[in-house]
Image (cartoon, rainbow, N blue to C red; front, side, top):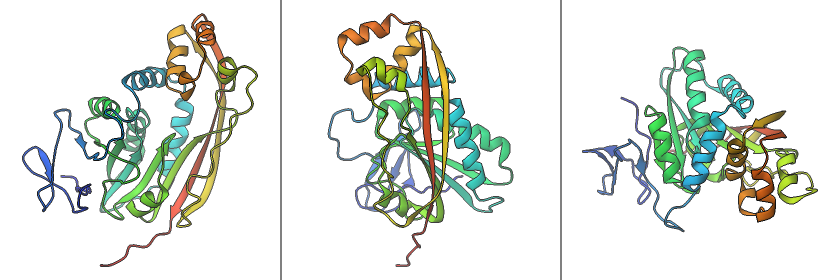
Length: 288
């Protein structure tokens, strides 16, 4: 049985399985859904936070077409390079903001084929219940939960490797849950990402403003490496083009006229541009 590393989002004590739920010693209880995930989200700013069902489905269909496989492959390679080898204890890998689990599922398959003699266990967290429900159905061997990235429901220094792909990130929380010298892999869009799509949405668009270093507020996360992944993709079919639009923030700002023009297209060639950043956690485990 895999070691449970969840902590109670109410009191912070360890959670343990009991009669179809996760329970702490103060009797806070969280039911395990029939699909297999657990909802550890407390405060909700909206009734259904996170990505909508439409955005989740659009992303699943688009990514399933292989358009971002180049990025996925590079994530897999950098993760394999960074994981501990031949560990006698369980290796915990966490995807923060995992969505419907596309990258995590491909990563699991890749590591199972290339990382031998290791007790690897995967965890996925997202604030969207729709995304987690779909992720669990697609990959029931991963421990998925609905949770808040600003208050990760995992024990201190329990994670060996964390990934965050186009997701909100709280560097203090990530440093807390990572083991000393545990690794964090972050993916952000580069300045040319989807530049041709952006031009169709806004017209004569300037280059994408690159995200700031998401860890800059926490010096305990030490930058190690940056890898740039760039290519040009040809998207065939109106459905695939609209799925791409629907999974981006541009969906909410495109004008009706420009959306109608995009709906008439049966092909779109656009750049993809990603930055993969790797960090080492310098936070030491403190004794109580």
